[in-house]
Image: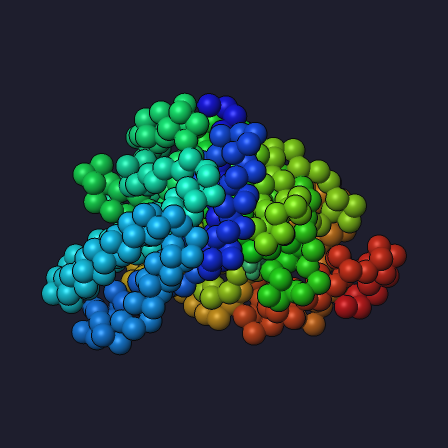
Length: 468
Ligand code: ADP
Ligand code: ASP
Ligand code: MG
């Protein structure tokens, strides 16, 4: 099965009939020279609408977004009517009728059974990917691709943490192979929804927002695929978030370490966990543009390549809270840090960046839900200061390992912006720091201009004078 390739299409790649037709073209071409496995996200906007309906139902107001949800569901039938064979379009229409009734029932249960809400939310959200996979299967069949719908919940087996489930790897590998290998052997093209899975007991779970990329990587790893392709709405991983930096350009090659850091620190184009399964099996990950399929996009492999100027990209992540814990009891004491991090572990809160001095620890979290409880438990350990409204900026490049002077250039460029928590990641391919959220766009724009848009001679001058 080593010649199989996973092709994952994101929500915007399947937003409308035109987009789905382009996807069918990509899969058709892939089917000529490899054995494609297709992983697909919900149609753009559908997951948001399903989760909003769950929230509305929880506050006793399910009717509020019903029209919007109905219109989004109807889009599946409209697209099938235009692109699928008549019998398959009728099939989609029937599935949709059942789905509407099931969703109405689930929304009632969300209101009536508050203790089961996390599980019901996942059940609701899963309809997005189940429908898009059924629709894409029908569209592919009409394009003469021998597609077969596969229920992803029979492949991706997870723990029961609803909303952000963790895959159980041996089980997932075994089931994915058992489901997909017989189809691939018959040269059929499996089509499965990303983002969704199920527990061993068969209860529906989801991998967290944007999790279809992760699904694709897990499927690719399970099958020892030749390549994992992430098809999205931009031409690969760009040098910065294009919504902030219009001049951002495609990065042709990245190492796994670089891509993982970028994904982790805010480059939405890849779900943060995508790289891990690919890296473990040494499977290349390619990020491609479904609107410009001929563009080579970005290739992520073990080796990557160095770029003159050392920096490959700048990522940023908003909504960060910084906690500073100060205590003279840290001096010469052992076990202090363990006690501190155990607090975060108990509250299942991920810590992103950590810096320590002799008497204080500063760290960042982006999930502030458990913050009041965490702070209460940290207070016996020392004085706790909480700063919200911060952002992480992460400058990434393999060249940072070996090129001196990058930090000087970076900080000279933004010398008038208040910077805290500076850390050069353990992998040494990133330089990470924290700024105020309301200055993060300016920070990223200025760094991009200095590190990518100017001549190296300008950079030397800027570093020497401290001028931005
Ligand atoms: P999909 O629906 O295909 O999963 P996403 O919206 O999740 O797509 O991710 C693609 C988007 O990620 C792009 O449209 C872009 O706005 C955003 N993005 C943020 N940072 C980057 C980056 N460094 N490179 C490319 N895209 C980025
Ligand atoms: N449809 C899911 C979401 O919107 C998963 C994904 O698109 O990757 O979060
Ligand atoms: Mg995504």
